[in-house]
Each structure stands twice: as C-alpha cells, then as structure tokens.
Amino acid sequence: MPGGTLLFLICTAVVLGSWLVRLSLRSSTSEPDSNWLIQFSVDRYRVMLKLFDDADYQWILRQPSGSQEICDKLRAARRRAFRAYLKELKRDFHRLQIAAKYIILESPENESQLMRFLFRQEMKFDAQVWGLQLYLLLDSFRLRRIDPRGVFDLAESTHARLFWLAAETMQPQSNS
Image 1 (cartoon, rainbow, N blue to C red):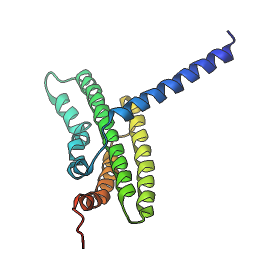
Image 2 (tube, one colour):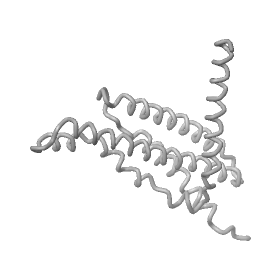
Image 3 (tube, one colour):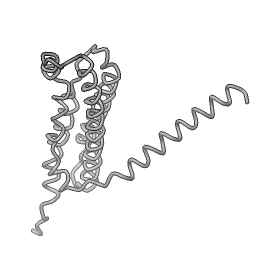
C-alpha cells in the first residue's frame, strides 16, 4: 500500500473517530432547562484556582521529608484533576450555550444582540480552554502559571446574561 494512501486512511480514521466522540458526548449531555440555568454556578470550579498554588509546593519543600520529587508527583496529580474540572466546566459552558439558544428560540423578542454576545463568548471561551490545555502540556517546564480566571469570567458573564432571561421564561404568562 503506498504511503500516501496509508496516511489518508489514518487521517480519515482520526477525523471519524473524533467526530464520533464529539457526537457521543453531545448525546450524553442532557438538555438544560431553565431550572438548571438558574441553579448553575461556576463556584463549584473555584478549586481550580488553587491547584497550582506555589505556597503548597514551598511548604512541602520546607518539610524534613519534602522533596522536589514529591512536588512533581503532586503537580502531576493536580494537572489530572485540573483537566477533569476543565472538562466539566467546558461541558457546563456548552450547556449554557444550548440553554441560551432554547431561550432565544422561545423568546418573542429579537435576540440578535444576545446571539452575537453568545457567539463571541463561545469563541473566547474555546480560545481560553485551548490556551489552558497548552499550558497544562508545558507545565512541567513551568514557563507560565496556569490561571483559569479567564474561563471563569466568561462562564460567569454568560450565565449572568442568561439568568434573568431564564427566570422570565419560568414566569407564568398572564392573560390580560
């Protein structure tokens, strides 16, 4: 089999595999409703802010049995935890986006400004997530501190913008 054909088959398999994974992830996420949107809080992800706190590693190194090896193992474990939290935050952010689209569909108002806002938020959020994933890959070199505040801010501002719209959709319509 020629090398070009083999390369094409491998690329096709990778693309199909990633498409199937995305499709299965989308179908496994339940549709958010107004109640979920109102109850959502980014606070459950705040622990991510402290996972790479240098004070923890400095404390370990000051202990008699502390070593750089222990710090490295702890940092690796925290990277795994951070990735798990980031995956959940991504899922919840995309649920926020889906909830917003349902609200827009049901709204009698023209929500074109909200659609533009959501589009910009999603682009910024995805860029921030890609950056965090890159920093996680490079974390062993300690080139830059991993700071998830950008994704928190985007999730919070998206939620805040949608919160009141969701509350309005839950209000019973009065027949005047």
